Amino acid sequence: MCGIVGYVGSRPAVDVVVGGLRRLEYRGYDSSGVAHFSGSRIEITKSEGKLQNVETLLKTVSTAPAARCGIGHTRWATHGKPTTQNAHPHRTGHVVLVHNGIIENYQEIKQQLVARGHKPVSETDSELFGFLVLEKMDAGRSMLDAVRESFLEVQGACSIVVMSEKEPGRIVGVRNGAPMVAAADPQGGVILASDAQPILEYTRDVVFMEHGDLVVGTEAGLEFRELQSGRPVARPTSRLDWTPGALDKQGFDHYMLKEIHEQPASIVDTLNGVLDRARAESFPLAAQPAVELLAAAKRITIVACGTAWHASMVGKYWLERWMRVPVTVELASEYRYRNPVIDPGMLVIGVSQSGETADTLAVIHELKKQGIATLAITNTRGSSLSREAQATVFTSAGPEIGVAATKTFTVQMLALLCFAAAIGKQRLDPAGRAELETVFSQLVRIPHLLEEYLSSPLRTTVQSIAREIQRSRGFFFIGRGTSYPLALEGALKLKEIAYVHAEGYAAGELKHGPIAMIDGEMVVVVLAPTDAWREKTVSNLEEVKARGARVIGVGHPADEMLKKVSHHWIPLPGAELHESLLPFVLTPVIQLLSYELAVLKGTDIDKPRNLAKSVTVE
Image (cartoon, rainbow, N blue to C red):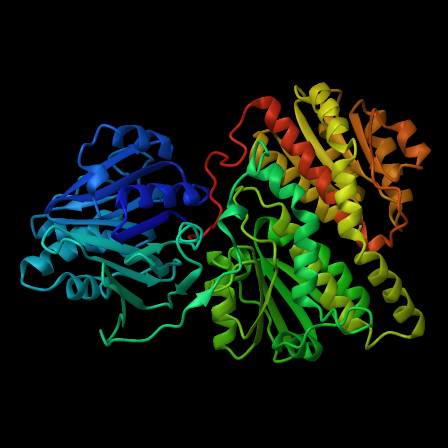
């Protein structure tokens, strides 16, 4: 979950590394650090807290501007507290390293190293790897061989980049689980990183390293080897369609706000990627292996975590409604440790914006070994999930920098909708196919509708409401049908970025316990668009209002009854929409409400405490 950058070449290495770490702070920001060569000596600058602390320290390091080789790290703490002592890079003698992931057998390794006279100074598992490399280099191994042999002694999903004062101008990286991307610098040299984003400023041609890849970087270029055998291996280059400009805030106060406003474009790009728009029919899927897997499925299990789990729950309604197959949506962190019933006719879909979510990846890996059909939905090309699954559907949200997922949630729902409708139209009766024609004709207008909605007084309305409710004791989000997962997602967003107590519930469940918490200090956000569940949802609203809760009603602008019984009112777009498309217009409401409350509370919206963008460890 941490961020790694390594550089060797003709450019100022510290500038490249620090600039790359800024792009990777979404992966973790408990502490950070940079190591650079000063002649034949490696200097390390690190600090707890955010990267700006290290940037301030580097201004006083006279050798930093001239360095042409360096590595850096931004940390999300797993082993050891987020202190300067535990921050990366770690030094063990002449060896310096940065590490992303977990060494599972670190206790065993630590006991062996201590018995051999070594004295670790940090609480981390990462430092131990440096001692292994140090021992082997001091015994005469090259850095390449020492790193390779040491890595074969550790267990767990991780990536590591190493430098040594014995071999200036050289960096060695290993990828075994945690992602790593490599690229040749057009001006000479190489860049290694945990993600492609730090590389885009210099080149769009990157290599997504495979599990068990080792890479050596020098000013002359990249050399890949197999970790197990040490043999040279060729790796293909991928050209990314992202641009460096897509990574900037572009005038918005926060990345999250920018990414909320990018949702219309993300829908267009994803539709263009998933569908064959040259065909004049509803939901014309582009030919790809995923289509065959979906069409053959007798039942579907979707595994995901967090926001992706909520998107998958919405997708369940569509898949069952139109494909007419049973669908279960599972938390990957629970499913992988159960003994679930599986059968040859099932399809398992892993949904993950990063494609590196450890629990989701583990489920797909294990079931694929058992011969079960597997499909990935991810926003990241070259990700571990896309390589592990039999087929992959790529969403096209572009880079998402804010830790709290926004536009990737929308396009995950969209991908599931398109597949449910496309497969379903082959199975439904004429009335069902006519319904899907209507859904498709409205879906292609959703981007324009959302763009208008986000440009309307929506944000001003939400800001005004947020000011009035900001001191509330807690929040409930309630909804039925497809609005129920939206209620869960609304509560999650509020917890993630505003740090307030919030819960999401199926509205019909309130009377089964949660209503006991309702009083005048609670706010209840009622998602009640005009759909098949609207009447029941409004009746649940009456129950919470009778107990004194402050009610925020969200519904069709012509719903005068809902507006009348709500203390605060947020109208949805007035355009006629099939009920299956309502999640797409509810989404910006719950996102903006959380955003505006977080603004008022002064939290770090793009980098909320204790969180990281890619959860690559359990």
